[in-house]
Length: 375
Image (tube, rainbow, N blue to C red; front, side):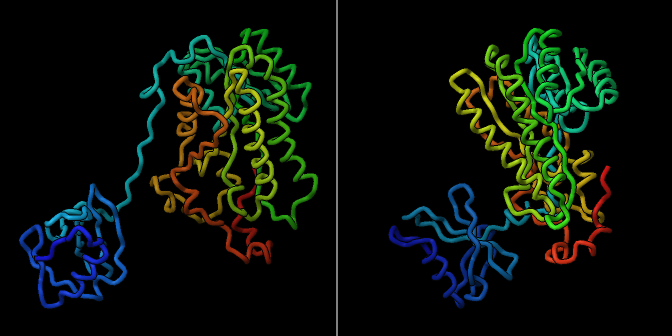
């Protein structure tokens, strides 16, 4: 029987077991295991409730050694762990915010949301309204705004004011804020969500196209802050800025939005520091791949199943982002400010460019058939 001594390390135990090529050890199931040096070559450690589990390459069995110094019990074979392993990945469930947060959480509060007429921002707006907030949604296409406002009000029973404005124009945003104050008398929460994006390499991206994305994403965020800040100070309110994860790595064909969103993240952090003493919080939500959005339609690569590389087991849903917004605007997040909250199911850890590299940058024309047309 092999036992730990107080001075023996786990690795020493492994090497001792490896040398017992003629002396089997007794497993916890009454079975016999003959350990050999090749089987224990470069074991992979995994902590499990006070034990170190050694996954043995080339063998289906798992050797478990007690890591507590001085424990006299022997190393043993753990077959129960293998019996719980599955070849099918678990898919994290999607829940509605109303199943977690109370209905009247934001009663009497007002949200001002740019980009609220569609996509992720519309779903964030819907969630806020379901929990009691009245909302002003801002965008360039007034017909879309009116239709969205009617849909949101019908679904939630709350008021939704459609306001036409271009976030690139400070005066237009100031007028949109004035209309919101005239209607509701206050602004508690702001979502800076207006954005634009498309796929293009630096060599094929015009200066005007780069400038346009910067104006919508970065300057649009800044203009929204400037127009709403006096009112948010009065209510000790909170900002959420919708960003991305593209600038965390060098992402080909995304220089324009990478630069724009990096600036948004920095702006939010400065806002949190400067306005924290005035009672204001500012955070960023960085969505990963979210199904059923214009972003996926514009940026997704034809014929690529990206959900297979998401640890959570599925693409994100707009409601995943909405749930995060409800939490960040709630008092439960009162100590969270100046942060970037990535909502991507763990995808960023495994993200690689979907376009073939370096082919896509050496010969952009060769990958055009993989790029979905702009909407």
